[in-house]
Length: 520
Image (cartoon, rainbow, N blue to C red; front, side, top):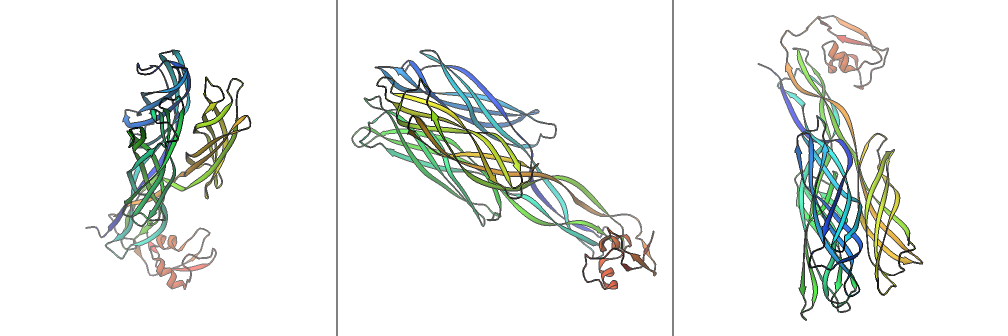
């Protein structure tokens, strides 16, 4: 019967295998509904792509999603009048997997890279859109190792401390939001909602002992057409959302990654006390995917032997994913949009929106350099009495630096961005843009580590010792542990017989006494 009881522990971790991006191109023709007037000129198209499901099929990760289009156009109806129409299109995109990637976690973010709409005829338009899909493939793994040996006092054990990233929590949380906007009497009552877009900003997370606090603001940007008027009115609301969740085992020293997504939005119009349509009610849900990682120091067994009976150490090598760190950086992007010759002169900005495309990223010492493009779309009132609304689009390149202490060349960076705020205003004959971006980076790398997975007693007799001692000249790479194991004694015996004060210090060239060398 074995005298050895190997005490084991398991650790789960995620390892980034690959990260890249792909494109999904959609082109489709759409009819203008019978309830809408003929299209005369397309002003702008907004698109909201959403990944609905991710499914492993054969050697591919299949992404099913949908895109919601809002087309703002000028209609020939008692003169030029702004109208809008909404469409929804489904799409599928595939990520090819390698042979070792069939038990993986896939994280995806979808952004609009290009969108264009053309008029086929007064009742039909064509929309072409290119969506950029940023994705990461993670392998979820578990390492089982021997952390201690019990059952006998005869085994000599050498331990070392390793730093491991452990997945402490992975949660999907819902944040519920509600908004009530009352349109003042200084504005016309609502005839039709032309556009309602939601954007998240000021995202925060606090991790305390066994608790997590999530919060963000959701900005509602609404365009509506006034009743008995062709005016286009812009109104907004900023709603605070928060969530407190008990998660056992988390604390303030842990790292995290969190992604937010608006999963639903229900808009309802209501009449006020005077019977006019001036109340807009919105209820929406924001889904947050939270992962909490601990950076733990764990004691593992590096080596072991027994002077009294032979033992075998079974070892396995693992490639571990390590998170070097996470950080967030705020970046201001400014530029002036030059109007083209055929653009009408702006008199008042109605609304502005933008999307952010990350074109390149580079990990350098203690930082991540990010190159990107801010794609801006501004709607404004003109000085023309007939065509009273115009829009202008532009792309603004930018470079930002995310501080990342400990980062080195060769490491990988997962970069996410969020448009916190955008302001547009008329400046001379240009439209000035000022946008605030929040960029986050998670720095990862891989390293190989060997763990002892089991300790068993071998068959056979223990080495015999003789009474004689050995006078040994210490070599360059010798340690007390190596000598004790080689000569089948203990570190404690070597320290005691040689009056060694510092366990780890034995000088090369020095002679030490080794009691009772084993006979093999």
